[in-house]
Image (cartoon, rainbow, N blue to C red; front, side, top):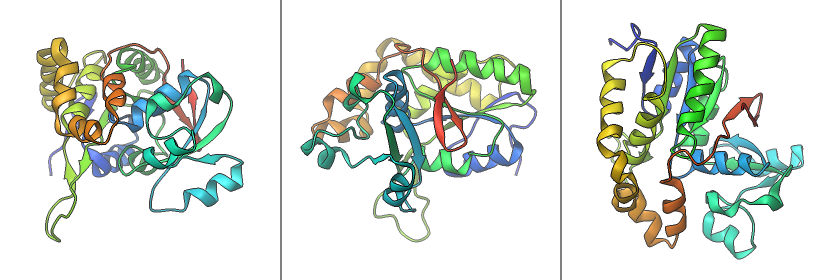
Length: 249
């Protein structure tokens, strides 16, 4: 299959896209707007230490071995006032505390691509800043850059069907980042940038009413949707260092 290899800046979807970029040795930017990426960016902004972990492995045991708290689901954690996958659950109280964060999309893609020269976490919240860091790393390493919007997972799929559901919010987040990257861009990346430029003046409304946004709102997490839809409010850029994120900036 032909790929985007003639170009410096590329966009690939989901776990397969993360694996392809990992095998090429690209700089990777993981984008999961609702909510893994936004949660990691917000948590590091407040000084928390986040360990990404795939949901198919026992994150609780891993958390115990490193002296960290395992992040529970939104509803369960809210009952005991613990931080969750909800980005707004993090604040100044969590500085220097360790947390293990699992998710079906962002954490899984991070785990798959953890051996690349540099893995960054991008969202709307830090779109410009993560691009600045990626541009500097490309000059240092001479590696290409792949932005990986993670998408969502279809539920109740049939055996012969794909599970990946491309998500509008991740595509717009990827476009926001790609628009600030330097170097030749693939046609796929150019179209992604075009979608962002077309939507950026109403991005809050679009994410509020998209499928993922409605799902979170119906579960009572309207504040998450509003928070994750904001553009360039943080300069924090999470960089994977061995098994946890540090602030690249």
